[in-house]
Image (cartoon, rainbow, N blue to C red; front, side):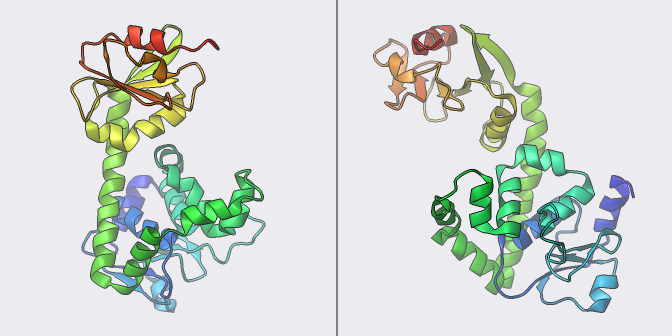
Length: 286
């Protein structure tokens, strides 16, 4: 089945079925991704246990429930998979079927992390991430009151459930489009021997949604953007690169703000010379 055929099949969906009881990031994001990739936005999300006719139907999209992975019939559950298999939650199975796994892995930092949390749990995920004996820190990040509020509202409030899934889907769609445009507009530079990502030709939306992903993929030491709070430029140290300490720019004529942590400096004007800023910020380790 080609991707075009798959998108066409999603366009015929009349219902989305996810499990009842406590909601999770997996079922919520699976619904959002479905809306972002072709399921009509008017389709209802029903939280129930699917019956045989739901699993047989080619117009019912079953996500994270049902004990079946059968893309031909639009069934995407993972709970029947053996523990020895590679961890894949429902939204990952769905994205892989669409052929978008590499794109989502690149753009969305949550995509791989939440897949592991959902399938193997936070403690095993912590060990997988190399934070053995500190898994409670990861648990504290996951089990936060804001996430708990959203997840419980998704479970209990049908109107909120639909609004949330559609809002998330629009964010996914916009981020994917921004990823294409930011790669067209970013300029790779080398200044004083330092690899720099120049985002000054990129829109605020592109930067806010995709600059982190671009930096993860390309590993520059510094990014340059237009200051969204002032009239100058913002220089941000990337990946905690030891070659740059922007606190060294304190007191320079161009410096409007230097963070004492050394990771950011803001200049007074867009015309300030990036080479001068980078040169001043270089450490003795260069």
